[in-house]
Length: 399
Image (cartoon, rainbow, N blue to C red):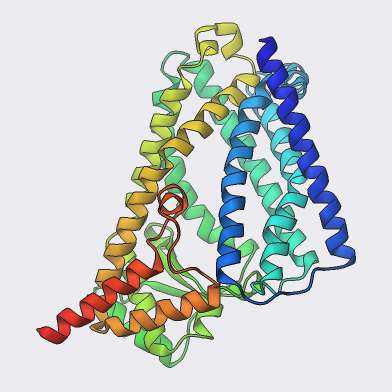
């Protein structure tokens, strides 16, 4: 116990020192912003990789340290005074809100300032802060809801809570895929139907695959970034293809058609449901791992609000360790969507042009180190994807 307390204090002190350093940098940036530098793909990629690794290590260290910290003890004692059904939310919501607010200077420097320095955002700091505060509010509300549900499951099914929790998570994932497109994303961006010749071209493409009624929406992605992107989101009636204005305004009609054909590949293959299944498997494994906590055998400890923080630490570790398996699935599905786009358009050269333009506009390196791709990348490298498209073009030329 003493070693764990010492670890918690050391991690807490290191974490606060890091936040203080980023806060000092934020103050300097606000008073005298760094000049925009020359586009440097390699340097940008190296910086992003370093921040991704550091962020993962910080998150894990803090998740494991927090349950043993004095702050957790005080919050646990205060939350325990609330009614049993409310205690988990009373414990989780303040933690989420305060930790997210403390992280704002870190997010400002490592996210906003980094992107601005490389010319990848034109967003004003005030608009960035407004988006972040919306995110804090949503995260706090979500943590309160999940903590309330989790606490109720643990109280009612003290021995089988991991499996019951996993069973409940599936409808929650489905609900999230309905709520997020309809109510959450519009808080940050505008979504409107694509019109004109490009809409007719894309609609004709979708109709060939029985998806003529699919929603194809334009998103004002330029409000946050200059990077181009498109994605599929939602399930059922909220299932839609979203294209950023940063892509629509800078890509040729042929390149746009290939990108949408790629997204149509996800749409037709119901990849959203595949990812939901993968997420459900990840949640189940993580909760079963969390159940190995020694405190899980102690009824008194299990009923404390702080038990949720201990579960969260185990879930965070298990999720991080299992993440490469989920990422492998997403990379495989991206390759499948590329193959679908080639078959749908009959023009792999359009895909090559689109990916080359994407690399230039997004300042994306064409190939990351193998370890980074395995641990962090949801997409195959652009070099691999372009090579596959060129191979498809050669094969078509021979046939």
